[in-house]
Image (cartoon, rainbow, N blue to C red; front, side):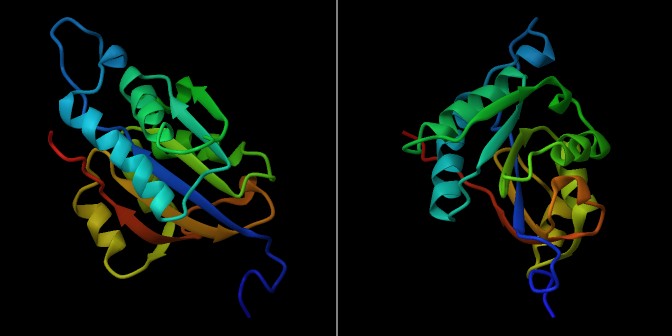
Length: 181
């Protein structure tokens, strides 16, 4: 009997998007680093990849770091009507436990949650939550979770507060890249 039929709750998706490639301007604090040229190309490609894979979130929670906010803005600009976004300082320099805490605070009405953040926290979160993966997805994340990477975790649950280590299936990993002009 599947988890959905056993009364475990609806299918939920946690989509982790690592910010696009940033610049490293001299004298600029890490939190204030903007996207670099490649990041400005890749972030819209991430938005198109999310839409093309039918991964439109009901809610986005984004790090307050400039490069993450710019990634979100450029990705969301590819959609007709972007979902609500909440900027969350706790996502900046967050570890897997901090990210999981933020995810667990998500209202039950949200079925697809997008986290826009940083490594190594996002990679660690994906590996912590994924009890299994489709095809080679887990191995791909273990090897590298590059900038602009998107990981999709699915699980069944009534509330986000029930999300625990090993409970999700890593269904896909996408690494969108924009074209050079």
